[in-house]
Length: 112
Image (cartoon, rainbow, N blue to C red):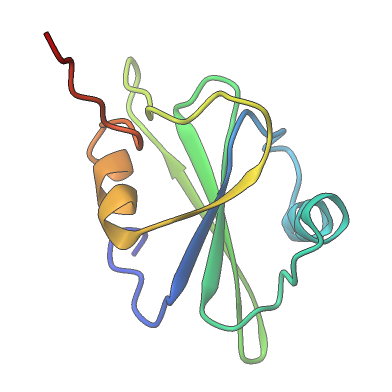
């Protein structure tokens, strides 16, 4: 389900670590209060990562209610989640796929 994202037009991640003990109300309040975004924006999924980087929560509002998605990787695995200052960052679907595949969002090429 997290890989398909049917009907999603915008993907927003919160960089840094998030306390994943928060539920729907807590995550929605982070989106609204800290980033002045509308957590009920149709077609937008907000993604958060915990301190160990092995878990992601996704928050999405659909007509009629909230959807909370929780993904936990197997032991020893971790997402390459951006650890810079906590900010809300739009990412492309390609970047999203790379993130789920274990790659960083910001690929770099070493020049000699």
